Image 1: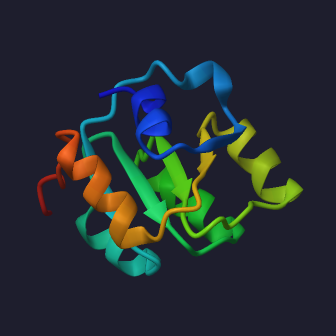
Image 2 (image 1 turned 135 degrees about the horizontal axis):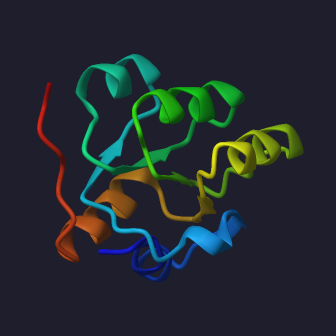
Image 3 (image 1 turned 45 degrees about the vertical axis):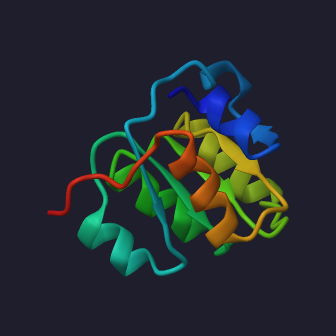
Amino acid sequence: MTIREVQNALDAGVACGEEYLERDVHSACGSDMMSDVLAFVKDQAVLLTGLCNAQVIRTSEMMDIICIVFVRGKIPDEDMINLAKEREIPLLVTKHKMFTACGILYEKGLHGGQTV
């Protein structure tokens, strides 16, 4: 699955990173707790989160997350967008709740990655 397919499945807007939407996504993680992301995420994942702050971008960079989807209509601020642009991490925004967004991606064939 590509990031563009994730975008289409979730009817998501692109806050930044339009040029990276053809990248392949291998797994997904839904979490508002960055400690869980640090403990369990790997393998070119897309992160679905309702946490909307710069720590999400920094954590994603450390864990090689290739795309962040903000759920519940959360919109990243300009500082977050600039940080994501510097790190080449696309940011998507969907109105879906986390549970629904994860379920949609699961139905489309995207599953959780391996645990560490």
